Image (tube, rainbow, N blue to C red; front, side, top):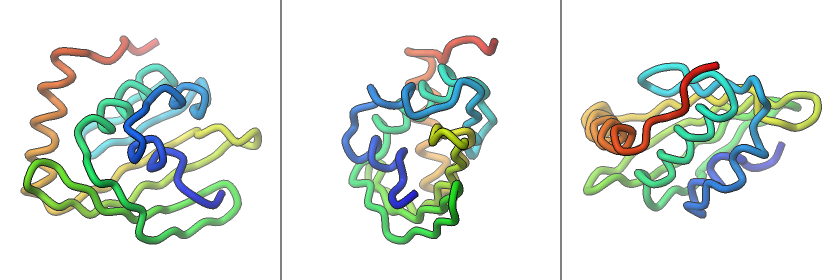
Length: 127
């Protein structure tokens, strides 16, 4: 693992590759909740790609099938700092993605926008 698979998607704003990157049993742990299953995780990660702008990876720590990726991003007039933890299966699919964001004020504003977007395009039901 050299670069974050998810951050590359967020930078490109093209969520099309997400389902093929995620294992069927993938879990996305957001600052709000855990989302289980490829379809739900891909939907949430793809929606985040539409909310965050100017995503830039700033550091990385990798160890075999796990990686931690520090990044900066913008939402509206807020600067965010984040860390994305990615775990890979033996076959290279993402099995667990965890998102940490700060500061709280910017995170709260981004969560409110995510909620609005998810009302318009809700994630698939859990299996």
